[in-house]
Amino acid sequence: MTPPSSLKFAVTILLAACSGNSTGPGGGLTAKATDPSGDTYGVLAVQWDLTALTITRDSGGIDFAIDFTSNVLSPMSGDSDAVYGEIDFDTDQNIATGTTSYVDFFGPGSTGMGVDYVLDLFDYKADSMVPVLRYNPSDSTYSTIDSLRPVFAGKRISGRIPRSALGNDDGFLNAAVIVGTLKEATDIAPNSGHLKVGGTGTADTKAGTITTRRTNEQRRTGAGW
Ligand SMILES: [Ca+2]
Ligand SMILES: [Ca+2]
Image (tube, rainbow, N blue to C red; front, top):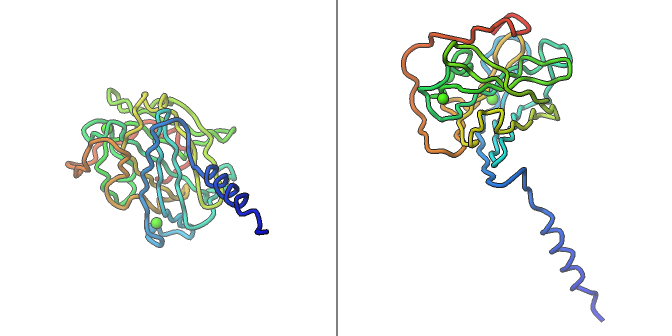
């Protein structure tokens, strides 16, 4: 008699059926911008070094993940050398609408984005929630649309933003990230242009000069950038 190879086959099939990696509702689309290690541009001791920005879009919103070369430290630690920064979103993929990206303002970037929404990874509340901000072009201010609790795990910061927090955008958008300590910016991703999550927009070149930044700087918890 030979061993019951048919049983082994059945187990293999079962494992294969369980190996799917679905996230959220339908319409999943993942875009990833990798970033080199060792390309930080700050001058202080602690240099948060990005390796990737990943965004998965589905019909209900977007999942984001920011990857680093070393284990991340939350600002909830109270350490000014924790990871601060923001993800900027050009939700209509139109450089002509929105405002200048922090990635362009505080980094060597040329995102080609007109920023409409921001995930503000500076402004942690006591419950570790951070705001999703909408830029208001009429008066150059920002409004808090939603809040979420970023997950710090290993070398990754991740979370989910529902489409309702992005003006019910379709989730096809452009994005870029800048990180650093509270004292200075240290890295951006991607190094040029932006992460394009579907859509039809092209990566335009930023024209003209930077004339405005957010006027509600008082919400910043510290000095610096
Ligand atoms: Ca890097
Ligand atoms: Ca825009």
